[in-house]
Amino acid sequence: MNQSERLPDFLAHMLNKQYGEEITQKIVHGFTMDRKVTFRINTIKTDINSIENKLRNLKIEYEKVAWSPEAIILKKAQERDIQELEFYKKGEIYLQSLSSMLPPIILNPQPDTDILDMTAAPGGKTTQIASLTQNKAHITACEINSIRSKRLQYNIQKQGATGVHIMISDSRKIDDFFSFDNILLDAPCSGSGTLHINDANVKRNFTMQLIEKSVKSQLCLLQKAMRILKSGQEMVYSTCSILCQENEEIVSRIVKEANAQIVPITLEGMEKIPLLPVKIKGTLCICPDELYEGFFVAKIKKN
View: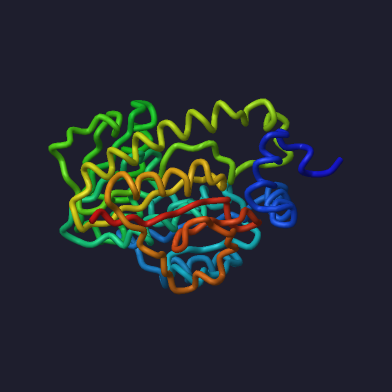
């Protein structure tokens, strides 16, 4: 069986239409791969040298990432091996995919600013923002689901992120009276960048309805974000989808509606990331492979 035949027919068609046959085959090959375990060093509680020394002492093979000194790729170790380690239990590291570490870095949060994470659970990006600002930013972490908010609270406490206020509510309903210096919207999406071809349920679970529902909520969330972002300030929009319906189409609509502009993403070491072609110059779409999930990131400035 051709690997792309394991995908829903409509998705294979959408990918071919957007990317062409050759790139689609590359994406589908990425859907067959098991990703290596990656984590982020939590500099609130420790430092990079300390964790690297511990890995070497434990004879755990690892490699670094060109675009972030805190990101670590494990060559062979599994998640369960890491979860047994003392420095994991103490919250000195956070198991996190490489792709999902990018939006907070691209946001470039600064101390003494008001930052909103619109869909915060389980807290990887929230605690990363806290770490990047050394707990000196005022972070509001919004989560609609009360069960997921408990996981968010647990991770915030474990990681020692002290400047975070959790708001258990739908961020689409935040009062327009509020305003923020920066906003991170890692929007709920279809997850088209994170599919695995060997998942027996992929054809049943991944539907056109899922994409349509995602698009609707992405649009509402982004419209709200632009209303409560301070003028002249920047936000980051990201999804773990590689479909332009959830990415470039949403972003270009908002840029027109909200008198905003795209801030081109520049990142030292970015050339090491497996990128897909994008329809908006300056945005980023990542091809799934053994290290990265399929992922989209755009940085938007409100004029």
